[in-house]
Amino acid sequence: MPPKPITENTLFYGDNLPVLRDYIADESVDLIYLDPPFNSSRSYNVLFKDESGTASEAQITAFEDTWHWGPTAEETYHDLVMDAPERVGAAIGALRQLVGTNQMMAYLVMMAARLVELHRVLKSTGSLYLHCDPTASHYLKMILDTIFGARYFRAEIIWKRTSAHSDTRQGASQHGRIHDVILFYSKSEQWTWNPVYTPHDPGYVEEFYSHVDFESGRRYRTDNLTAAKPGGDTEYEWHIKRRMRDAQWEADLENEYLQPKPGCEYSVAKPYKGRFWAYSQANMRKFAQEGRLYYAKSGMPSYKRYLDEMPGVPLQDLWTDIPPVLGNERLNYPTQKPEALLERIIAASSNPDDVVLDPFCGCGTAIAAAQKLGRKWIGIDITHLSITLQKYRLKDMFEMEPKRDYKVIGEPEDLGGARQLASENRYQFQWWALSLIEAQPLGGYDGSKEGKKGSDKGIDGVIPFMEVGSKREKVIAQVKSGHVKSGDIRDLRGAVDREKAAIGVFITLEPPSRDMITEAASAGFYESPGWGKKYPKIQILTVEDLLHQNASVQMPPVHGTFKQAERVQDEGPTQPSLFDE
Image (cartoon, rainbow, N blue to C red; front, side):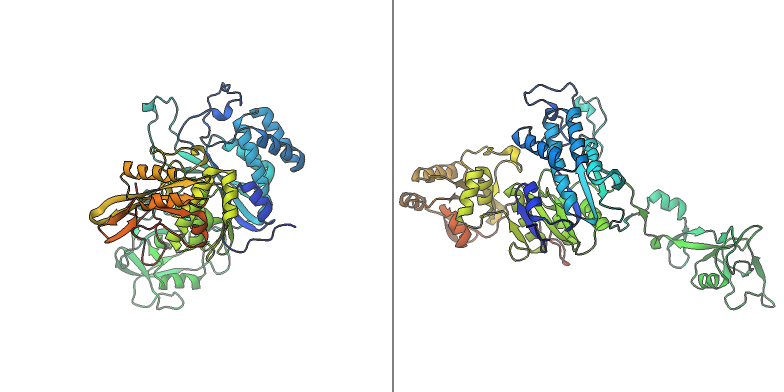
C-alpha cells in the first residue's frame, strides 16, 4: 500500500532512501532543500581513489564525508540501471565509464537514487534546491538534468559563504575558494515563485536617487512622462503657474481645464515633436495633487519615483549579502547554514502551509526556517545526534515538544527498540541514550567520528552547569549497552575524581546489580554551594526508567548542554547559554 501524505510536522531518524520510499507519498511535498555531505574547506582526493587505494592522477578536491564503493553502492547502481527510468540508468552507466568505480561514483550513485525519490515526492508545482560545492556540482547537475529534465533547470545560485582568504600563504597555487553552489530545479513549467528583492546598492542610490523631497526628506528619482506613441488623451498642453519653491515648479491645480487665469504668469509644457504624454490629463492632475511631479526650469514635468516605494533589486543568482553563521545563531554544528539563506529559499519557492522537506537535515536550519515562516516540514537524518540537536533547537526557538507539536519516527520508544538499536549500531545507541539526559556526546557530530571517545577515557558525554560565583562544573556520563558489573561503577568513580567532575551518571540498558547500587551509594554526595542541596555523586539510570518512569539526572537545575538557539518571540531572543565553548 502506498504511503499517505504526511499531515503533521515530522522528524525521521534513519537512512533517507528507505524513509522516502516507505513514508513519503507521491507528489506530497512543495519544496525540497538538501545539503548532502560535502566539505569545501579541505583538500582530498579520496573520492577519486580506487578502493584498492591507488591515488588518482588528478588531484581533485573532494569530500570529507563520503560513501564508499562496496556492496551497497553496487546494489544501488544495479537498481538504477535496471529499475529507474531508462534515461537515468543510461546516464549513471555513462558516468561510471567516465568517473570510474571509486568513492566519487559511489557518492553519485547514492545521490542519484535519492534524487529519483525526491522527484517522485515533489508536487508538480514544486521546486528542489540542492546545496553543494564546485567539487561535484557539475556531476550533480548532469544527474538532475537527467531526472528532472534540462528544461526545468532554473538557476545555478552562487552563494559567497565566507569572506576572502589567502590560501597562497599556506602554499596553495590557486584562487581562494569562498563559494558554494545551489542548483535550483522545478518539476514542471508551472512552479511556485514569490519574487524576492534585495536593497539597492548605496552607490546606485546616491547616483540615481539624487533628489530629496523638500518637505518629507524622501529620496526620489525622476522619470520621463512622455511616450513615443499616442494612446487616448495624450495630446494636450500642461500649464504651470510661475512660482518658485525649492527650485521646483508648481502646477495650477485650481483650473479644471488647465487654462491660464488672467493676471497670472504661466509657462506651458507640451510634448515635443513626435512625442506624446504617457498619461491622460486626469492622471496628470492626480500626480500633481499628490505632489508626484517635479518641474525643470523649462516647466517640463517629470514623475517623482520615491526610493522607499521601490521593492528593491530583483534577486539575482549571485548571493553575496548573506554571511556565514555568526553570533548567537551559531550552534557549533560543523556544516550549519545561516537561517537567512534558508528563509530566502523558502520564502521564494513556497507559500504558508506548504510542506518543506529536508532529507539531510543536520542541525535543522531548514526546519527552523520553515517553522518560522509558517510552513509544514519533514526532516530526515541518519544520526540520533542530529535528531537530538533539532529537538533542542525547536524547543529553544519555538517551545515545541515532540509528540505534542511534532512526530519523531525511528527513535526507540520502548526497551525492545533500544535493544534493537544497540545491536545495530552501538554509537547511535550511545548518542540516543545521552539525549535522554540532555548530555553532549564527546567526539564528532557525524559518523566519520564514530568510535572517538574524546581525550578522557571512559567518558561518553558531559552536562556542564554553573555554580555560585560563576564556577563551571560538569556532570560526566557513561553509557553501557551490554553486560554491566560493579567494576564499571568503580571505573566511573575514578573518572569523576580524575576529571574533577561534580557528578557521574551511568546509563545502562541492563538492570544494575545489587553490588553496583551499593558501589554507587558508597561514593557519597556532591554538595551544591549555590543551591544548598546534596546530589548523589554517582547515579545509575536505566534506559527503561528514562523511557517510562520520567527518570532524570539529579543535579543543579541551571545547565546548558548545547548552545541555545534564539527564541522566536515578540519579546526578543533568549539569553545565550553560559556554557558555550
